[in-house]
Length: 191
Image (cartoon, rainbow, N blue to C red; front, top):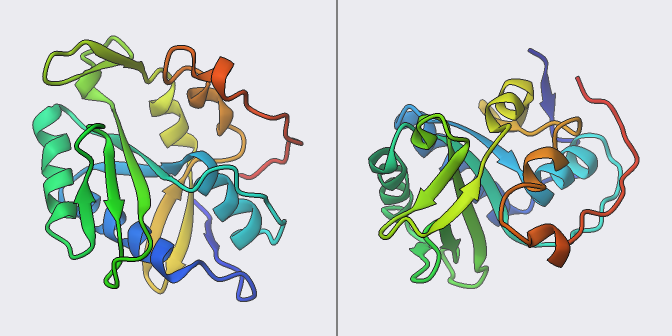
């Protein structure tokens, strides 16, 4: 698999780099496959790897994490929360925040679980009451097609490729597409 590198003239924001490294390191140490998805994945590839300017629509950092069960998911969250600057959301189970060492950034981080946790249904139901469900169909395929990007010396993360970027997003939350339609994007191929 080819490993893409960040362009010298388009470095990552230091706080974003810290978030990416923390999630990559903690997921790896927990034995969890993860990949960057969403707008940050698009921007990382277009702007920071290929030098194509992209206008940021959102400022959250989305990761899809392949976990077997809720215990493994919570273990990853616990590892991240043990780091300085990371905090939890009281309202959203998938949401963490990174405020940085100076407590000024407030990066929202969403961890989207998929894999064995679905028990073969392609959906997850969020604890404690399992009333909120989320469709995660296709994430395994997107992970298999993800590209590797070296974000720092010796630190690689997997990033959803442009070929697959819009597919899982379209089925996440019921009604989300009606509220936030995906804009048409020109298709480029990254292999």
